[in-house]
Amino acid sequence: MTNKKQIAVLAGDYIGPEIMSAGLKVLEAVSKNNQFDYEINAVPFGGAAIDETGDPLPDSTLEACKNSDAVLLAAVGGPKWDHAVKRPEQGLLEIRKDLNLFANIRPTVISSATKEYSPIKITDPVDFVIVRELTSGIYFGQPREKTSTMAIDTMRYTANEIERVAKVAFEMASHRRNHVTLVDKANVLATSKFWREITEGVAKNYPEVEYDTSYVDTASMKIISSPAQFDVILTENLFGDILSDEAAQITGSLGTIPSMSKGKTGPALYEPIHGSAPDIAGKKIADPISMIKSVAMMLENSFGRGDMAIQINQAIDEVYKKGILTPDLGGSSSTEEVTNLIIKSIQESSEDYVTNNVR
Ligand SMILES: NC(=O)C1=CN([C@@H]2O[C@H](COP(=O)(O)OP(=O)(O)OC[C@H]3O[C@@H](n4cnc5c(N)ncnc54)[C@H](O)[C@@H]3O)[C@@H](O)[C@H]2O)C=CC1
Ligand SMILES: CC(C)CC(=O)C(=O)O
Ligand SMILES: [Mg+2]
Figure 1 (spheres, rainbow, N blue to C red):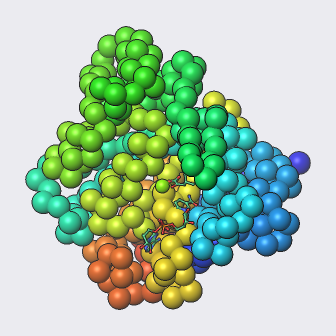
Figure 2: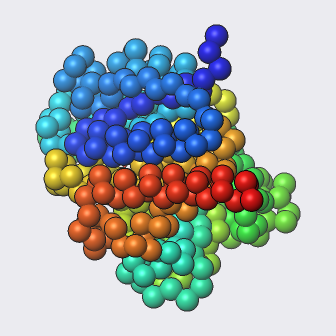
């Protein structure tokens, strides 16, 4: 039995393989410096898997993920498969459901290094996470149907589905700034009224955590006008999907935001929050930061290597400081140039560490 950490790698489609390659190069570099032993198991997923096997989530891919210590995913989908019988995005929903990854954590941080890339005026520090319910709600509810004269989707939540993700949000807040905001549409939707009932019950177990609520339309405005007021935003699947892309944009680019999806047991999955960006695929300009930060999140949360995550994140700050950035952040560098500079910074920081230790 090997004690190497097993990582399932799902590169996916369009820019997926480009940014995954960047993420794996950084993982290799930081691991060499820190005696971290791992094995990669690259498996087909999404459109690439449809081309190979006819199914976006082949059984063998799901098995590989279940047998791993963590899953790294880039992005799937795109015009090539928009009319497939089963689209790549369906594979994405299935893998989340099959691994029971009900809590999706999406961070929004505007640091001193990234402040100048934000399109909004920042006065106070911005550092919040969206805890998005990931395996239920309107993306999964039945009935779902479309005929030539009508269509229906169903938003459905059980008490257990709300309670377990609410606990994740309150636990996180208790290790952060003790504040949870439930975002919903409780002035209209029965499911949102139910979310409030259940979440209030969970909040009672966390008296030190301030708990408030916001309607989703207002919350989407506040994310732009006063983002510093948020610590942990708890919300259902569809609202979290939309709000997290909006929140990403206030940091400068969607192409820089990672995420972690986790359940109660089993491997967690780490992926950028964006899609496969077909409009820039093949141009060698995809921003690798979202994928590289996903690697850092994996090292910290699945492997207890917060030290390695810090080295990666400090190296990312360096590319911001030097302005070696891809066009989404106003730069003119390639995916490879950004990745190489991040690797160089990691290597230099470990040389400094050795030198300082010797002294
Ligand atoms: N988790 C996943 O695999 C997701 C897959 N999708 C799928 O991706 C495909 C494309 O969807 P879109 O609506 O275009 O959303 P998208 O997130 O792929 O792209 C939106 C915009 O952001 C830019 N962008 C995204 N990531 C970037 C990066 N790393 N560097 C630089 N720019 C970046 C794109 O060029 C595009 O202009 C669709 O098939 C969609 O269903 C969408 C969201 C999530
Ligand atoms: C298939 C979609 C639900 C993927 C997406 O947009 C996301 O997870 O952010
Ligand atoms: Mg999305």
